[in-house]
Image (cartoon, rainbow over all chains, first blue to last red; front, side, top):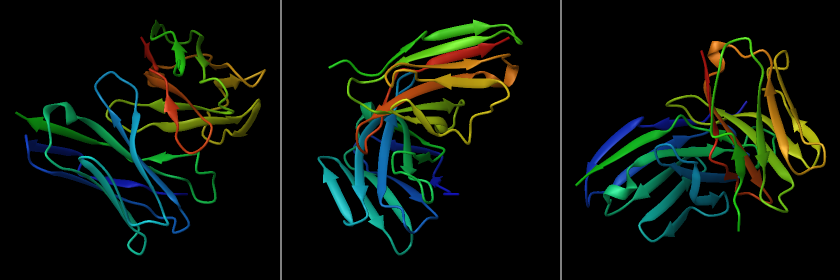
Length: 114
Length: 111
């Protein structure tokens, strides 16, 4: 089945610096890649997603890039703020499955130090 | 707009006891998911419904877990009997298209 690997598992940055989280996937047919943010004790919430027909998508301080050849996609957060501290999950649809069925990475715990 | 509602938020039970979780998806969302999230891990799919039909339950441990979505709206997930290893957060999500909206989850502790 689809294998989604996420790195790093923990990331600590100084406020104002950039943070980059990377995920790799195994199914070249995958076409939808969301990123979820989960604050402590709260529900995962979608922050940005990208489809395989574009290479980059940006929303204010958050951007996602997709490299279909290498089968990886990355989350970029610029000018980090303490409220960005959370666990971030990437996801991809399973091989041959509906893109509603998401396989999640193990998560990256981001800590932004003021 | 109300989001995905789950109850209870927390549940503590003794092993071998039964337990049930309830989920009310966002109105109009025909797809409903139950995910299991262990501490420090990403959500793992247990079962997905399209309306009232379970279209993917390959990861559901059917010897002790069951789920239903009789009228294609609310859903319940049951564990009987519960084991110590079932302690986790059980997340319900619903979607109409690509984006899955999650509920707050039910944190289950089996003692």
